[in-house]
Image (tube, rainbow, N blue to C red; front, side, top):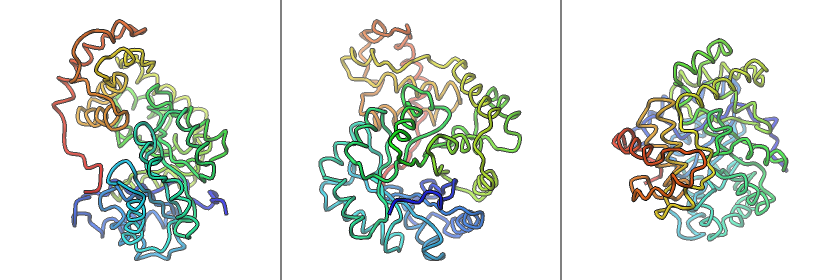
Length: 385
């Protein structure tokens, strides 16, 4: 039976950002309060993953042990590109997920974060055949995948996994037209294939909850009743084919704010869409690097540096003034997601600048990254220990 998206709440509860996250530091009473508030407001879709540190166990205590199994949908994910050396490890992850949550089955099970160099691991371990077996055994009602990928990759995934019932994609107004992410194109491909979409990262890890003053001036008039975070959430939820937008909520105040904004959800009006376009324009005119993502520079780089991704990270600094978040983006977009070398490995040959059709002073940008972003790192737990 196909996934009935009409029964799933438009606002989803993303469970990656529970405060604490280390062993025994997540406040289960606080998470329980957040879960109860969300359910009482009509929410019913929870998104977690084996790779989110202690998220499943916390959700098992705060949700699954306290509420009837038929009162919510729960989605989790398996990962092949880390902490996995065989198909047996995929089965081990699944069993740990069910044990952590304390449930007999999942409503949705996804392959976690396809795209770039990560995709090969799923292929190596025949992950989609494993996913099919999970559904056949009744351990998951519906299967699909999440992806940070190019439109071309998404087309291939949908060809390779024709029985995928949903796809989870990054959608936010900052990256909607970004040449590094091409989110609009990905959404259009999913819509053309008739596959429903879950939107992730609608607030871009919290970045869009605290935009620059110039962006606030644009949004305040059009969204008088919305926080900057819920305005971003509503943009993602209004995208074509999106049946659920995930919010990584970590406080009761965030839950209350998001639930209020989605109490009677309506897609963005024409005026609100115009304000978002103006906010995008303000960001583009903020002194941000005008990289189009053509990657002519990368094709001639002898070091294999992720140049366009590095410039994306620099733009986060320019737009938001937060070097810590810019540093995180640098690692994610260049090394983790792109599998490229970092700017620090540049040998200053200048071939990239000669190839750049936009005449971007790339070496100067690398100097800014070294001085204004690289020193501002802080630990970020990405994987389960």
